[in-house]
Image 1: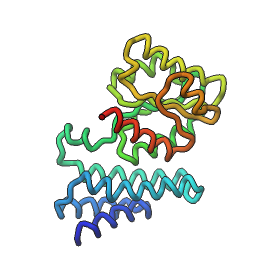
Image 2 (image 1 turned 30 degrees about the horizontal axis):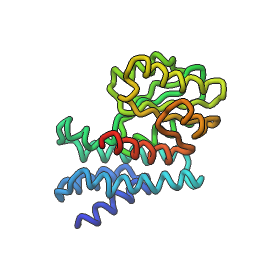
Image 3 (image 1 turned 90 degrees about the horizontal axis):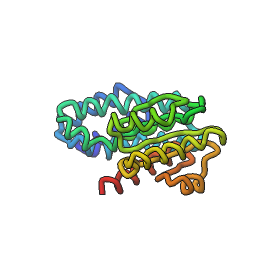
Image 4 (image 1 turned 180 degrees about the vertical axis):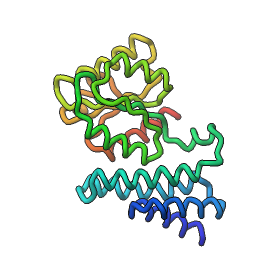
Length: 219
């Protein structure tokens, strides 16, 4: 089996939500000496992109996304098993701290974005819902994350997004983190007003935005 066939198989395994095929193809990629980075970006990630688009179009739903995500993660674990921590970090798209903001208990949207980010190669730490602003900043420092992502589903909880930026500025560490926010009432105007870095209307757009911002950060 040549490289293209193996990459096609990796892509298909995600599109078919076939964990067994994903693991089998990942092992074949290693045997064939394919660079794990290529196997992930030109195989698995392409399959995840298909799933992401189908999700946006309402063709697949959260349960299917979760199965595809599990297949993706299992295959990535096989491909990166023999790598050093340093190499694993270079494979990673970045580290994200995700949460639903203080006072808000809605987490379906957050969970979808979390799944999409994980399945696109990001390491995601989920703090859950109704997370105090101070805890968000504390954990961002503790885990040395690249991105702070917060979801607000009510106009009354949106100010917590602004307060995260404010606290980061007060502590003199605003430039250390990319701040991305979303949620039904959140708009691009609001993001600009509070001085955040990114906003997206859909989960797949959130992944694209996160990747763009990470490229800038790694410069």
